[in-house]
Length: 211
Image 1 (cartoon, rainbow, N blue to C red):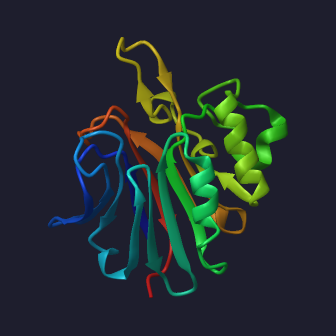
Image 2 (image 1 turned 30 degrees about the horizontal axis):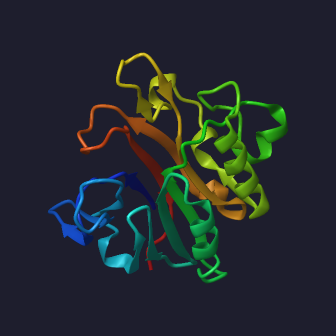
């Protein structure tokens, strides 16, 4: 079965789960101010397979989804918390599939030397400093950046549009264990969805079998 997994930046307050008719929204935000914040939208078909949600901070949270063959440990982050991410990801069970979604503020280029980690379909020609950090992080853990491995129009790659409406960047990414990279069937952005964020909605289509 394939199922969409949607990651988003959320500028709400507090932490928890907001249950809706078609989905559950798990979020981890600042306790009082509507700034930073991250969250995950779990579709109705998967809501009963969520076994654990851990709000680490307003920039990082983890959700664990039970499947028939293995568990997905999905971590979502927002910007410049690489050390906290490294520490937290070491606490996940070894047999879980690690899937990281978030705003890495990282532009990944299309140099052939990076193909095994990022593929060939990034929006950008060159790699930023944060992009190099993302590639180093993924390669060191035998992970791949799935968000730059699928052929799409540029408008479906860009995840952020500048206030002057002239600059588009692909800085939000999906990273997964290399041994399970084929479980990610697609990653793209949806520009017309109102998600109360300055970034476009990024959706990853994941193949799994719920338990």
